[in-house]
Amino acid sequence: MVVPEPNALNSSLLYRSLGNRYPVATRAEGVYIWDAQGKRYLDFSGSAAVNLIGHGVPEVLDAVAEQAGKLEFVHSSQFTTEVAEQFAEELLKFAGSSFYGGRVFFTCGGSESVETALKLARQYQVEIGRPERFRTISRTQSYHGATLGALAASGNQRRRQIYLPMVKDPEAFGHISLPYCYRCAYGCDGSGCCAVQYANELERAIEESRGTVAAFIAEPVSGATLGAAVPPQGYWQRVRQICLENEVLLIADEVMTGCGRTGRNFAMEHWGISPDILVLAKGLSSGYMPLGAVIASKQVVNALEEGSGHFAHGFTYNAHPLAVAAGRAVLQQTHPMQLVSAANSDLPHSVANTLALELARLRACNSVGDVRGIGLLRGVEFVSDKQTKAPFAAEMNFSGKVAEASAGRGVLVYPMQGCVDGTAGDHLLIAPPAVIKKDQIAPACAALKESIVEVESEIKGNSR
Ligand SMILES: Cc1ncc(COP(=O)(O)O)c(C=O)c1O
Image 1: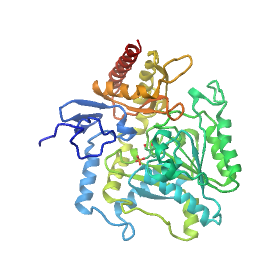
Image 2: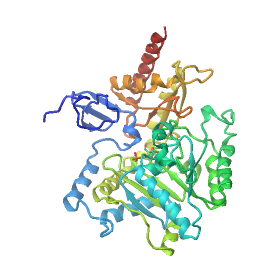
Image 3: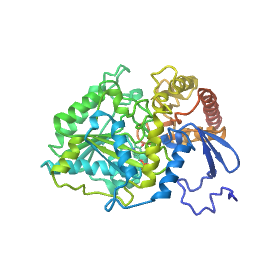
Image 4: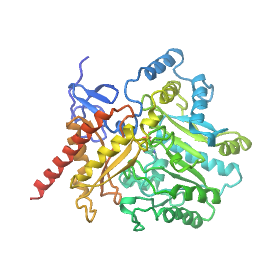
């Protein structure tokens, strides 16, 4: 096969960054991806916190091929399929006892799942006789997807700024702030004393909107936007209580944190919380096929069953047989491959524990202000001054430069900006597949450290 030379200027693809030269990926196996030049990259961010099972797992590839050989597609308004029925049943079991009697709606990814969850919450309120409830509350530093509804719920300034005129409806979407321990707005000393203060912002927002709030949506651990910022103990418990007291549905957006990534089947389990609606994608199929899901609790399902009997929503590719076959095979391998325990950083011998220890060494770098996270979802935040925690100027693109330098060394990480105020603030997301080996972690962290030092000295040189 002739692989074209990557050339930003003559590509017919509309790239994310039009001037970029992207390497051409040709194959992947385990934790590695190879490009057309034969260069090998360690997938230290699981692409974008997508892949937990590793690349090229034969059981998953075979399941998709087998399904394709039998039935590639039917429309969900005309048929159901054996593979979707079985996977939904297995996924409900994986979600635990609080979802017994619930049901699963399969989509093609995170944004579709978020749209589905927001509409399901709204319809729930209508079905139980509360048509005045239509508002969604979410959090300022959050990302829920690229479609306009999901973007309206998102707080990520960089990703939503220019689309705001299209999505801005102050009536429908409200935002509260969220725990960000490294830069606590309540001046907390790290003891978690701010947990209730942050949670009570939700109570105030619900009060102010005078009975119009249908749902609260949030990521259990802030993913891309803040870089694995873990909330203090007590936050989620208080949020759950507020939602129950006000009969507002709690939607957990576990697109990034779900399906084992944090060392639990779902991240909310760390706090003993069961949401009313669970939103999944990414790790659900580990990227083998485009797949997302919304799991609705029994209470939500009952409201529809006993009400109109219809969910007024759908996509052509709901429960696509090839995608659900991939997801089902991934879930079937999750237990035998011990993916969730590998991602459990509380277990001293897990790879997640090793990752946490190795990444902590990056604190020695002048520009590393914080290293945080849980399980196999980790963040590194850069600052220009450790004392004041001042960020680098956004134009410097510090995290982007580190990611580029690291890719040059064959280690892929996920750079983001905006953690401080929506624009400034550089961080990286590290989220490798759970099949990474301990002896692959230290060299990857060493390469990352070298990359950070390289960018630090480049910036120092430029400022002379
Ligand atoms: C928490 C969260 N929700 C939703 C999405 C959107 O998912 P997708 O890109 O699959 O549409 C993302 C993507 O990064 C995410 O991290």
